[in-house]
Amino acid sequence: MSSPDPPAASAPPSVGPLPPEAYVRMTLVLRVGLGLSLAILIGGLAAYILVHPGATSESVLSTNPILGYLSFPGLGSGLASGAVEAFLTLGLVVLVATPIVRVLSGFYYFRRAGERAMTMITLVVLVMLLVGLLVIGPLVR
Image (tube, rainbow, N blue to C red):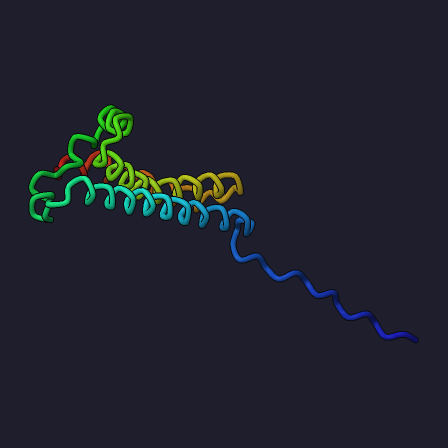
């Protein structure tokens, strides 16, 4: 008589409700966004120092050189004309947009996986980010 076969080892449970590729892609969004914003900011800062060699931190802060580029038309015309301050503003915009895009990608993946609770949590976080950026931010300025 043969002995009974041992039970087959079950596959280890997944880390979360999403496939690992989703987490890799969401992490990639953060890494690319941070790297891109740092490259733009470092290049813009170096160019600003070259263009304005005598500028002190006090003079720069008192004049707020990026103020004219905080709108899309202003940023677009500044980038088209090659204004250094516009590139600094673009670096800041990319830096601020990075976590928002990350939350959007999380919302997409949770929605696609059918995770209703995580989809709602991610949607609430996205709404809070946008309200802070588009409503509260301008009121504080």
